Image 1 (spheres, helix red, strand yellow):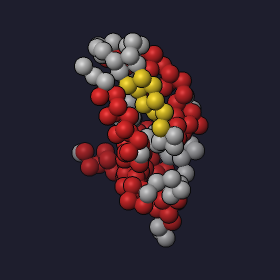
Image 2 (cartoon, one colour; image 1 turned 180 degrees about the horizontal axis):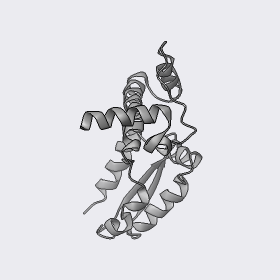
Image 3 (tube, one colour; image 1 turned 90 degrees about the vertical axis):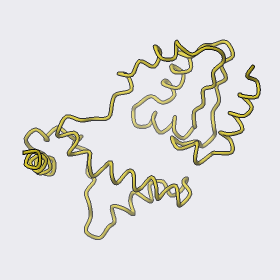
Image 4 (cartoon, one colour; image 1 turned 180 degrees about the vertical axis):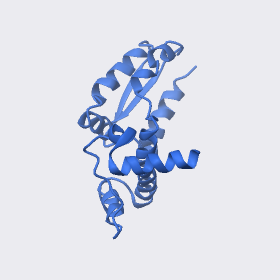
Length: 165
């Protein structure tokens, strides 16, 4: 029965009908091209700022996400909306100084796609204890800045921790 449901969801998602007709935004035009050019498009979208090995990992992850999302959305499974997570409630339990870091590329990207990256950065920082709060930006840092800007990240963390009692 599950296989039949999965097959039906895949067919509906591919055709944009049935329960799947609103599963993915109408602007979603990603398709697997017979010549493999869909992979080149994924690669090229980040090649200017990611090292080759990191880009390969990101392309593999994105391809997996893109291939599975129509099925997921058709079954009513979506990525959790950040607003549903009680960040301020969790942050209220933080004791002592805190460090808050954002990559400028990441923040800008989320601004660009409508997720208000700059506003979210300020809001999450304001939810942390203000006494001893260190706010940092890593220039050019992406959502993968721990990997792409490891030296800058490690330097910030080391300096912050060296001040801990």
